[in-house]
Image (tube, rainbow, N blue to C red):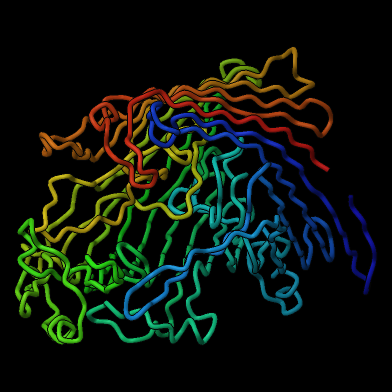
Amino acid sequence: MCIATTAFAQTVTTQWAGQCTVDGIVAVNMNTLNCRGNDWVWNMRSTIDYSLDVKLGDTDAAMIQFYDAVRFRYVWGSFAETYVYNRPLVVTGAFRSVAGSSVNKHLLWMREGWLKFDLNNVMTKRNIRLGSKLDAESYVQLGLIPYQVGRGISLGAAYDSSSYLGFKSDFYIDQYAPAALINFNVVPDKYSFNVYGAILKNKQSTVGDTVEAVGGVNIQSMAAGGTCRQSYIIAWDHKLHHLFCNNIDIEPYVVYLGAPDQKVEFLRDTDITLLTIGIAAEAVYTRWSWGCEGAFNLGEALLKAWDRNALSIDKNDNGYLVARYTKVYDQDPALKTAMLAQETTANDQYVNGSAKSCKMNGQKIGPHLYNAYDRFRAAQTKFFDGYFFLADASYDVVPTVLQWAFGAGYASGDCNKKTDTNAMSHHQCMNQTFSGFIPLQSEYTGTRIHHIIALNQGLPRCNNLNSADTLETNLINDIQSATIQDLTNIAFVGTRIVYNPTACKSYGLILSGNCVGYWTPQPVYIDHTTDVNRLARNFLGVELSTEFEWTMWQKIKCAGYAGLFLPGFFYRDNHGKVINDFKSSSGSDIGFIGNVALMYEF
């Protein structure tokens, strides 16, 4: 619905719109690839998106534009959609957790909302030219803004997302990042650039956040969180259009992430700075179209020196509650008879008064008191040097009817670098590398070929756990999580066919099929009790999928996809590995996922 009125000699245009989507998801063996467990997901959900667009001035070049989009989503039969997360609690020095509570209310929330100001109207009155033409659109935009660079790999728009992917990759994005965007259209249709800044997390929104005690076990920390601890992104991308006989568009970009107080092992134990430099290109020539993108990471992660020892509450042999240390034993921890020491006033003097250094790991600190071999974590610096590159192309075999596409990609990975810091010098600890590519807020599922399964939520791809870990070592997990879905530590090659039946042109029927093979560039150790040093083979498997889209009647559309994942040697070699997120063993059985959606636009 569109309404146009006149106020203060300016035209105000108001437009309401929305979309109601009902879709169902079925996922079998998608989280563990093990048909002997309970790896089965089925749900139906309703999603309603409302949008309001208000423009002051000409509808094509409004002086001021306000846009707001709210979303309502309900998973049929779910207990609750709103959840308050667990909160830490300290009881006599022992860290406990207060369970969060669920709220059985289904809420509207703002998915997208921004104000946009046309700079040309302001500058024209001051006789300032922003580009070669005064009517070239340059603007400032503030609010929850959908923004990405390139294909959305180095920086995507998925600030907050949920559940499995819908038919469109951006459908599962529940909220865009709060940000500011400045666009300068320097040469219309030729050259423009954006400067973008977003606040991802603000740990200074209240005085309580600023003075919150966060360094109780951080050897080098202050008592409080302190100021200027926000996580933020700054991006600068340039867009060059119609180059080389008007056939090629190029987008170089730079993305900077400042993220203090992140978590690798403990809350706020890591500070991260990440710089990503990349370039994307798209081209069209006769029946061919092609595109590519590549980027590399720079920056570092500073893992703070940490005392892992805390207090836990336990029962003694008489059934009474007692406090015990978590990283202090009553004898050499290498002995099988060693037990965690009980907390007493006398023991506290030795535990808290002894030197806090990795050199004290495994050492005796008092009568019947020994540090665990991993009590103290040394300060470490890991420098980022990950990268990725992908390219794809399509050919119109029969224009507007049949299209064939193919593509390949490679993203570096980093697994199995669980270093023993007890055996490392300070120089070695402070000069490590992390070679896995790190995407930010990525929702990428392909352009000309689609990745419905491998880049969907759930499929396990990398695990650096190793059963050979012993008490005599001081190992930590690396930055990369055990279950990942982003474009990292993965290589692929695949093809896609898209068919638009001429007999169904009026219904907009589109059918397509994908076949993609995947590998892991960085292999992982097999987590078995025998032959623990053997690496798993790299071949992940093959994804076979099909998609359809059908305009049934006017604004009613039906769409969906279905796919099979045929596991390769990687999963056969890792058969039986425990996936911590599900307390279940991985397998090598065929995985299936399907999604069907009915959409109505109003």
